[in-house]
Image 1 (cartoon, one colour):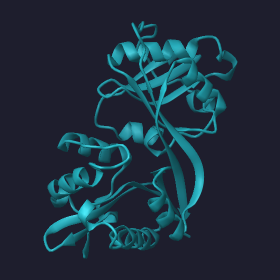
Image 2 (tube, rainbow, N blue to C red):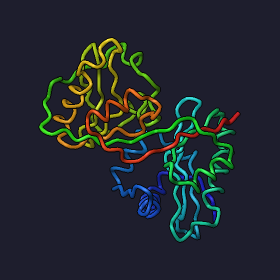
Image 3 (tube, rainbow, N blue to C red):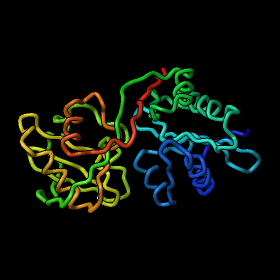
Length: 265
């Protein structure tokens, strides 16, 4: 296998390899070109810090790395089904770690589905450790009512967080996004939604205003705006309050993941 850093010229090959690698994943995934570009942009993809393995001219595996400040993030590791078991992922991860260190980054983060024991074992052998469990939820609201209009993010929004948002839900990731996002709420609580997908990366309510129906009203407003089920991806599973809130909404858990981290210094 020949390992090369990725460039924009590799995009078409990457798209084909990405979809083939994730077609039989625990949660099958298929993206078109615009969807992949949007995902990479939002997560802070850096081609020169990302790597692919090639068999002659054919891409057979990849590691897609992102960066923000001194932290790197792996937004996707994949191998074609017929190329698995030959150490491609391990070689690409080792190459990534070496280059991220040389680039001066101090931490490397990733998420992995908790049922994917082979991948977890690989990451542990490379030195990654568990940081927190994350849950992904789907929420369908019957006959949602638009109870909040579009607004701006309150100055105290971040101070209302019970836990730190995961990488793709961070404020920096939201600002990088190519697709439109909308802020709903007021000075008591706030929600960020991407109407085109129903993705809700952030929801926060002033602690003094909780358990008064404000969270449900925000979710109903987002559902009315999006016109589709809402997705809450990679929510800290240790937050018992938000878990109880999702139960009250009749939410469905899609999958559980594990956030892992490797110090690079």
